[in-house]
Image (tube, rainbow, N blue to C red; front, side, top):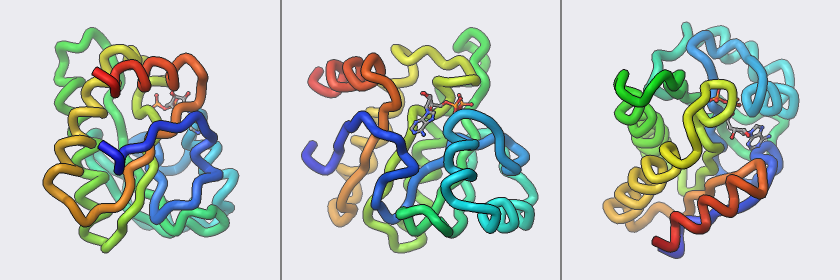
Length: 168
Ligand code: ADP
């Protein structure tokens, strides 16, 4: 799948139509990748987010990218992981699916994802990775005109695991 690219990178540096933010339901900023995106985008991002009335888990909302290289930010809210039997897989899959659908609706062609829910929200990387890959690959197969999906891994460990699972 040559339109899927796995990279080890800080997602805030990527030059794409949209980067995806692993946000929380308030959409008013937080730690991890959310904090990094808000810091890099500037205060205007928070101002636009305040107008959105939050976001439910599994859903996605789009804003401009402001000071980021990326033109847009797609904010999605991943599930908090408890034991994997509380609907977490479906909600995580919905994050990827709804973010990609929003990109298409807005005429975007390139997008970069962080590893949603695998930080503070506690989703084991080994369980989240196959879900993300399945959704991204299914999307690319049905959207031949979409140019590129990047998965930005923030650690070498995550990158290595992703590469290993992508090869399978
Ligand atoms: P969540 O609350 O959805 O778990 P986190 O931000 O805590 O969100 O973590 C999600 C993933 O994003 C983690 O794998 C974390 O290592 C990664 N991450 C944190 N900062 C960045 C960044 N600047 N670029 C890319 N990934 C990042």
